[in-house]
Length: 204
Image (cartoon, rainbow, N blue to C red; front, side, top):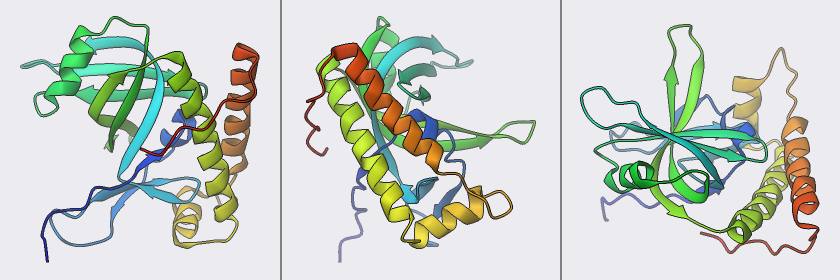
C-alpha cells in the first residue's frame, strides 16, 4: 500500500462562504493527515479553487519576502499569502500588475488574532492569469456547486451536522445567505454580459 497522500479535490467556493469557514479538522491522527476546512454549506475542503480579480499585492514579510494578494469575486475578498515555500505563487504576486483576472488553487489556512477572532486565508499552490470568460464560467460553476451543497445540506449528512454544530447559533443556522450570494453572483454576471448562456467550466 502506497504511503503517498492522494490529491484532494479542489472545491469551488465563493469568498463569502470561504471566509466563514473558520473551523478546521483532521479525520485521522496521522501526522501527515490532511487538514480540512469545514464549509458552512456542509462540505469539507482540503483545497479550494477560485477565480476573481487580483486587486492588490504587497510584500508583508519582515526578514524575507512574504507576499499578500487580494482577489475579489462577486461575493467578497479572498486573502492569500505566499513565501519561500510557495515560490511560483510568490513570483506571480511579485510580478503581477493588478488588476487582472487570476485562477488560484490552494489550501485553506486559519489563524487566530490577538482579539480571539479566527481569520481564513489561502496558501496558494498555483496562480494563473486568465481571461474574463474563464472568470464567468467559474462564477456559473461555483454557483451551481454551492446550490448543490445546499440541497445536500437538507439531507443532514455528516458534514452538514458538523456545520450546524460549529457555526450554528443556539440551534439556528442560516445557510440561505450562501444561496442568496450564489444567485446574486449569477445576476451580476447577466447584468455585466447580457449573456445568460454561459457554460459551466469542466472540473479541475
